Length: 459
Picture 1 (cartoon, one colour):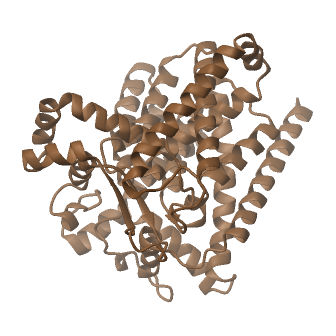
Picture 2: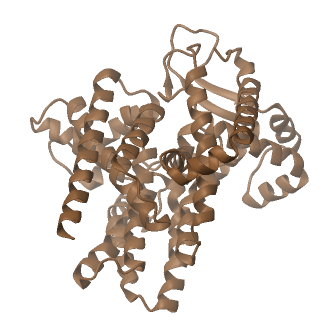
Picture 3: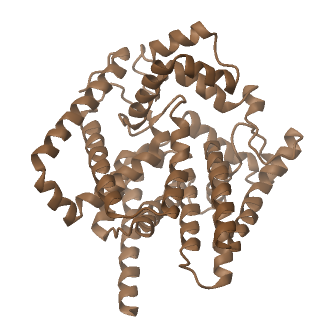
């Protein structure tokens, strides 16, 4: 037993080290020197805390939570203290974090929930795929992967507690507190994860009443601890004791309501930093002409109630708009996020993405049929999916759908490296190949319809 545990630890260590090295190589060849737009804002906000004299009250930006700027501050502070240039420290820290996320955390959650063991070489393939397809989110200081990692840590702690995988009471208390901190941290990194607070609160209350696992209530302490800096900032600068991010002070209304209105009139949003192309703007808005027309007819959306009425009055149109949102959110065309060459050959990137999505769906269906879903698995699956579903009606960017991509890529790799799946695939190979070709054709057709407004060809 001890020898088996030693081999497992050795395998995870190799996987983690390989992931760190791979991401460092990405940083080396990426050679990013400037951070534009959101990435630049997050990087600048980190300095607000004060590199020479730190104070949590120095941060006073209402649109974003305090946590990710605090993370970038820590990186800049390490550089300020002489541990290397800011860029080098950022490369090392993100390599350590995201290698843990891809190589250790996600496969472990998959093992606990679905009893799928992802071997070392499968983890290497999965991490390589993530590095290639999400490289912009790794190279730039963006919140998408960081927020998702926080939520996955909360899910992992919850699974460990509910399945009694930790025996020592003191450790269980720490897991519960860590669960609350990770859950709160996800929200203070990306406001869309507020929905997970609501979902987790309902799930934990139900489980406490049903199973008497009072240990889960220590999660409230974790949320309280992670919320206190935001409460102090809000009280100091915005005269409120609320733990919520004060986005309404910037927009004059709910940020999400604004996003819902933008989402009606646009299919997708990309960010262009290619200065050589004069006729394509920095903010590439792929308009939805149908949505734009009905929005102008209605005179806009001024409340959530009017949004609901708007949707019911145009049910068929809204269904089509949001189906296009799902496809465009999953359609990775420019993995760098900030586009340096709008007219680059994007065919190979799309082919890889569509193929991984296809096999991800295949793998997901295969493993779902093999595993009996219980209450625990369903509750965590729903909690994970809620923030993704919440961004579907908004002005979509592909980085908002990274959670869906990761699930499909992970199940796809798990399927492609599973002997039972291959036996079933070979049995129906011609049918599967036909469906795959049809799937690719539909995806490329939908993509061309979106990008035609800017005259950008497939290759």
